[in-house]
Length: 425
Image (cartoon, rainbow, N blue to C red; front, side, top):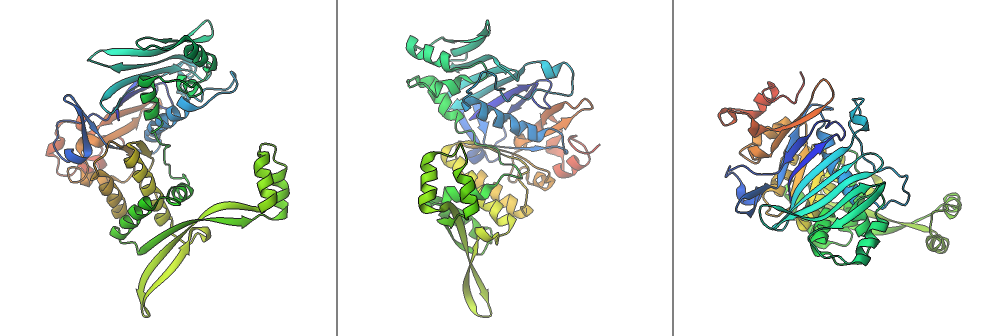
């Protein structure tokens, strides 16, 4: 679970900002929304970020996307860029390094990860863990004389393994991408590496969730039943979901094009020649309706776009949330209200928040109606705001930073009246 992350000179975060999942002493919903890691650490499972358009709230989610991609993206060429995106609305910052500092827990073991890089290479990358209150360095990777030098500090790693990782660790890629290519056992580091793999890709308003959900439900009856139960409770009349693999014939013109694609493996080309079809997933939704003929069952297909956007969005979101809860993963959803009725959105959040797990969910939204649910569904310390100044620099702050919040009759009205900023001037 993530405790906190510090960001500097990345996208609209020119100056250092800190985002934290640390819970306050508030007792509301602590059984399901707060995870007690140890005597001194309580972490939130949920955070919601408000802010006006282009305030930088989506950029916060892009931080997690960048890191999850960077950690495991193997670079084949030293000239490839790192993918880093510094603050560009300033002549100095665009040429300076970016910094990331994340503290997280794998079960009850606390880790700290630090990264310093620019668009072309990594200058510092290190991982520490805590046996007591002081960090113990596991590895440190620095740039010396144009080469990445990796030192393992508190753990024993053979020279063969160390040299293999250093050879594969190009200046423009993460230590973990190189570590992935070496067959070795480095327990404390590998525990962190496996946790990093559970940082799921951000869901945006344009994310195609249908294909993702189809893959997940095609061979998972438990997940399908979970979604059916949710849809039933949310008053959908869907009584069954079936995802099947369909063979679709390939027209001759398309076949000729595919067979001339250089990057297509020869094995796949042979399969196409023999089967002359493309396999794809199709999901059918069975609707049970009551009309003048009594009770009837109709089938609508994802293939024909017969289901509404809201239904397909719910189908995908519930698959992602279920996966996050099962894997104790980290999931970010940008503009979660997209294509959803406000009451359906409340239902989705309610089902996630009532379930005890070590998963974490962060969402951005313009739906200020959810602020009416503070202390009813949502904890005060889960609410954050993003605001951008005249220089284009984003700042992050939380609801509990403001005095007198407990005395407000309506947090939503206070937000609309600019009490917390993060809205139109």
